[in-house]
Structures are given as structure tokens and as C-alpha cells.
Image 1: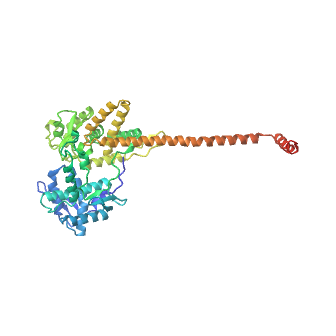
Image 2: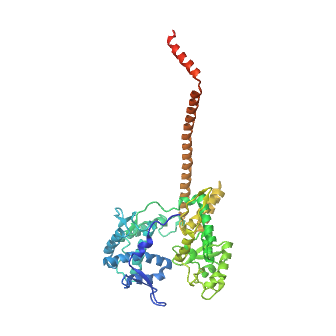
Image 3: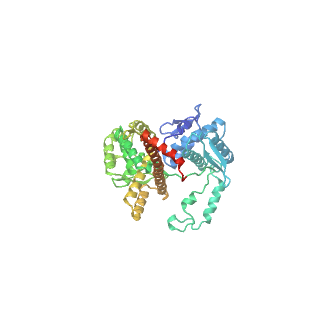
Length: 478
């Protein structure tokens, strides 16, 4: 759950470069031009070459981050295809001036470490994508013979160290499950080879707030309202898929007729997984409600937007997207976010007793984390005292989410632990405050009692007490 604090869109739009669609059937589907209308040929060529190397969504994302960098080079009169040493100077200056990063030479490795500052227009994850986009650009251009040097984003020294390290490993080619390799593949892959690297801080973990059942209930209420008030069957179906499968938004929107048929089961479908380079290899499982909504959508609303008016799944080609816009085009992330923002802003305020609660801030990707934390909460409750069943169910959830690393589920465990620690301290704090309050109450009561006793004493009693005190002076035994 998070609020967007950075101005990434503004950062991209101020690059001075813009995208122009190419003619239908032409060699270039898109041209990148500068403020005077001249083509930025190297970026345009990279976009064409990149089409066959992975999913189109990654290509579009990378292009958005490349525009500010190459706009900066054009503004400074710098050439993109110099030798790596000079390109690294350009990149370092760009990161300092435009991205407001602090660059520090790495004293133990080659290259530079980057630290985010408060002035940066990008989040840490966006800077990581920016570095990946520049690295991808030079890799593609070098592979095509259009850049004559080694990739400036990669450290030749660190790459050599990594190769030598792999040579020295016992059973370096063995899989992790064999148990004979000198280190896990995850440890090997985590060894740096990039010349510019974000300084490693706290490892990623989901929002601690999501482990609170109260927050989960509030998110579910918001999602129920948004799904109920969505204006199209398409968006209601997307909401169902996000909530009940835990799939990523891009995976849901990329669902095709071929991916659905490939599973050979009406309650399963294959989608493009993160890092699968456009291949439909991740299996998601559909509930009966999703299957019924999918069939209804294809036969009614989708058929109205289908250019051929097709009403049955078997009539669609394998590459045909399931989700369409009114313009007969594939429904994409940008179009979905347009409807998401409108629904998100219109949510009614929730109440807790007489108190009106502040609206929650979350994104479509947080629905995935909500799905996981809810299931982990249920497993924890159902398997009290039965660790073996809990282990099996957690492994099943691991497979269902198609996580490559078994450590991912442990990140959620850390969030649960942190939440439990915070709740325990909150309880302890309330106990201490209560203990500190009780002596004050007793003191106030005793003072009030003595005051009442003194005030209730009669004038005659006061006089007798004073006379007795005066006679004490004459006692012989003193």
C-alpha cells in the first residue's frame, strides 16, 4: 500500500523527445523525434530491433526511461556511440544532474554505487529500471553491430571475476536440488557485474500493514465497491482475476485465447510470466465465478468490440487478446489505469463506529500482495500445532504464485513477524501506561479523602486538639 510520491511522468515528458507512430505496414512502427521534428535514429532503430527480443510491455517501459537519457545527450551535444569510458562519464553526469543520485566509487569492486536523494524524481525501483533500460539499449545495439564496443553498463573486471569464480566452484553446472554445487545459483547470480549499482539496503518485503486483518478487510471493502461500480464487464472480470488468482496486472491483461485453450481446462489458463520473454508459461487457476464471467464477457461485450463480431472462444485465433477496448484494440496497462484512477477516487469513506476513516492508498499490484497475505493468514490459523501441513500448504502457495525463488515467501514471513512485534509492543506500552496511571489515581483519591476529613472536622474538635497540644508542654515525663 503506497501513495505515488515521485514525478516519474514529468521526468519522462520533459526529455524533449516524443514518439510518433509510423505508417501501417512500414519498417518502423514508431519514430522517436526531437523538439525540431528530426528523427533520433539510434533510439528508433533500437525500438525496432527490440521487438523480437521480449514482451512488448518491457520494450515500451524501457523506451520511456531511455527518452530522458538520450534527450540529455542531445541537449548537451554528446554522442551516444563513444567508447565505454566516455559513455560512463555521460551516464554518471546524467545520474547526478537529472536523476539527483549520489554516485560513490566502490572501494571493493569496480564501478560506482548509487544512493537515492530526496530531490530525485524517481523511486529506487524506477532507477533500477532506468539502469536496466540503458544496459539493454547498448546490448541490443552491440548485438546488431551498431555499437562497436563492450557494453558500458557492464564492468569487464567484475564479469571476469564472476567467470573465474564459477570455474572454481565445485559442480558449477549442477542444479541446486543436486546439493553438490559449491553455492546456490541465487548466490552466483547475485554477484554484481554492473558498472553502476544501487547500494544494497534493506531487502524487499511486502507492506507490514497488509498483515493486519483490519487493513485486509478495508481493502476488500474498497475492491468490492470498485468492482460493483465498474462500468464494463471487462473491468469487473479483470478485478476478479487480480483478486482470486494473485496474478500481476500485466499477466492478466496479456491473457490470450491461445493461452486459455493451451491449458485444456476451463478452470486454467496460461499467461506471460515475468521474465519469460513473452512466452505463455505461467499457469493460473480460475474459479467457477471467473470462468462464467469470462464466457459471458466473450459472448456479449467483447463480441461488440471484436472487429469480426466473434462470440465464441473457439472462433478466436491463438494470438487474439481476451480483453479489448471500444476501438477494437488490446486492452493495456495505461487504459486500465485510466478507469482504475476514476474508481479509486470515487470510493466512499469507510467508518469505524462514529469515526470516519482516512481512505487507504494502494495500487493494483498491492492486490497481489493482499492475495498472498490472506492465504498465509488462513494457513497460519488452520495449521496451529501442525507444522507439516503448514509446510505443505506453503509450498503449494509457492508453486501457485510461480515464484522462482523459495526465499520470496520468507519475505512475507518477515512482514508477519514485524507486525506481531509491533502489536506486542503496542500491548506492552498500554500496560505500562495503565500501571503508571493507577498510582496517580490512588494518590488523587487519598488526597481528596484527607481533604474531606479535614474539611469535615468541626470547630469544637479543632479547639480541643489545640488545647491538648498546649498542655503537652507541662508534662513532667517529657
